[in-house]
Length: 147
Image (cartoon, rainbow, N blue to C red; front, side):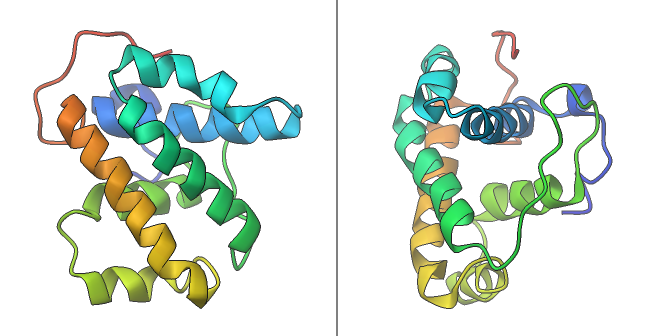
């Protein structure tokens, strides 16, 4: 979490930058009563992340419906990563390497305990899609431009 908090979005690696954009656009589309998949889908396609679209949508819906508190996302135009965004980046990007019990314990503090395992699977699937697309941190950067 602390590696992302208050960092400039423009300075993030491709994967975290992609996730910040996608999460903010998802929230914005819900506020505008627009279909989040229609809003985020084209950029998932551009980044060869279509395998990650369903787990991303499920993750965001789980956080929205079963969160223990409101998660604060910055507006799409904000140049800094918010505290809650940093927490989610850390959870998603560490999901493949984090021991299952530790991850379950952390997620039980974010969503209703009975939803923690579903959220863990969603985050792991999203991170796996990012890895296959080459945008999980630690991979070589892609040449495509993020919005």
